[in-house]
Length: 282
Ligand SMILES: Nc1ncnc2c1ncn2[C@@H]1O[C@H](COP(=O)(O)OP(=O)(O)OP(=O)(O)O)[C@@H](O)[C@H]1O
Image 1 (spheres, rainbow, N blue to C red):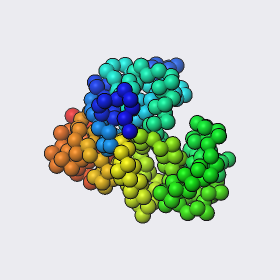
Image 2: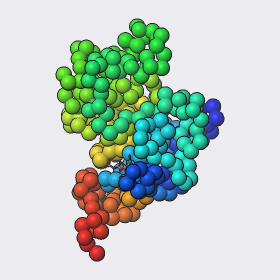
Image 3: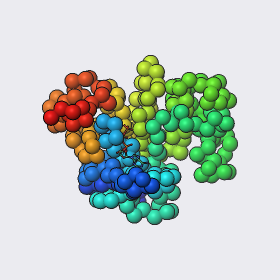
Image 4: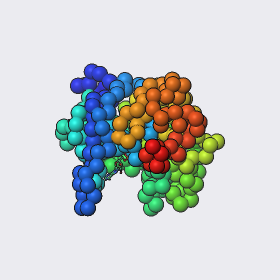
C-alpha cells in the first residue's frame, strides 16, 4: 500500500494554506489557512464545515487535482500537504500522474456530471482504458460487473445511458468509476448526496470494505450517521480554519467552536449554521 518513498501517514497537512489567485475583477482569496492533521494508512477522516469553509479546496489539494484541473486553480501558499509521500507543493509531473491513479477523487455531484453519450459499461471502463488501451476486455468486463454489484446496481444497467438512471443510481455509477483503478486513497465529496436513504448503506459498506482492504478514506459529508460509521477522526473547518479535530461524538459532546455547538444542537444539519456576524448579531 505504501509508496516506496513513503514512511509515514497516508496524508498529512502541516500548517497548510491555500489561495485562489486574483482573476479578472475577483481579488485573490485565501481558502485554507494553517491546516494541520495526519491520517494514517488505512485510516478514515471526515471533513465537515459550513458552506465556503474550504472543504472542496482541501480535497482538491490533497488529491493533487489543484495541479491538473482547469481554470482558477488553488495553489499552496503556505506550509505543505503530502499524500502517499508526495509533496503537494512540489510534486513532479510523472509522480503527479501516478498520484492521480493512486488517489481517486469523487467530486461534488459527480453523478450529475457523467458523460451523457456513454453507457454505464463505458463510463466505468473509461479510466482503465485511458490508462491502458490494451487492457484485457474480459478482465475489464469482470471488474465492471464486480463494481456494479458492489454499488448494488443490477447487471441489466450495463447498457443504459445516464438519462435512463435515477439521480441516486447515477451517483452510484460515479462511485464505481472512481474505484475502478483500485486506488489506495479514496477522497469523496458528499458521496451520499442525492442517494436515496434506503441505499445509503451501500456507500457506507463500500467505504468499510475499501478500508478493510487497506485503503485510506477522506470524506466530506453532512451525514452524521456516516461520520459515526466510517470515520475515525473528523476535521471541522470554519472560514478556512480548523475549529475542531477528533472523533465526531467527542467533538459534539464538548464542542470547541460555536459551529460545532450548532451542529450538535441541530443533530447534523450544519449547513444551516450562520456566523453571528453573518446574521447581524453582535
Ligand atoms: N474557483 C475558485 N476561484 C476562486 N475562489 C474560489 C474558487 N472555488 C472556491 N473558491 C473560494 O474558496 C473558498 C472555499 O471554497 P470551497 O468550495 O472549498 O468551500 P466548501 O466548504 O467546499 O463550500 P461548499 O460546502 O459550499 O461546497 C470560498 O471562499 C470560495 O469562494
